[in-house]
Length: 77
Image 1 (cartoon, rainbow, N blue to C red):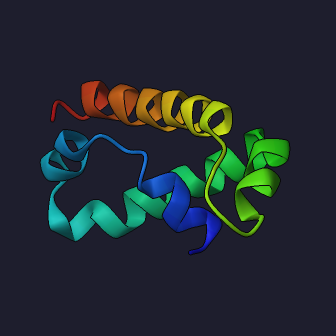
Image 2 (tube, helix red, strand yellow):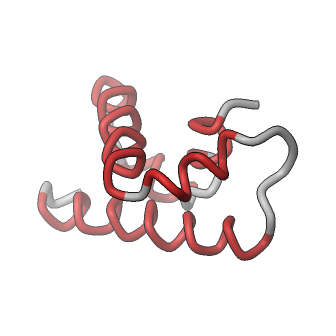
């Protein structure tokens, strides 16, 4: 499992459902890229083999869900 897949698995399902399918790929790739740029240390830990540790999973979950929540409000989804 790649780091991107591990991080995307933390997104709340209702956020993914609300994003139109035609924009979903762009939205997820852009969000992962933003996390990799703004939090390179966390992204590097996610790239390591195996499951995410609980503390890292919670931190990444709050970051990615916060980004998606802000995008949902911005685009009125």
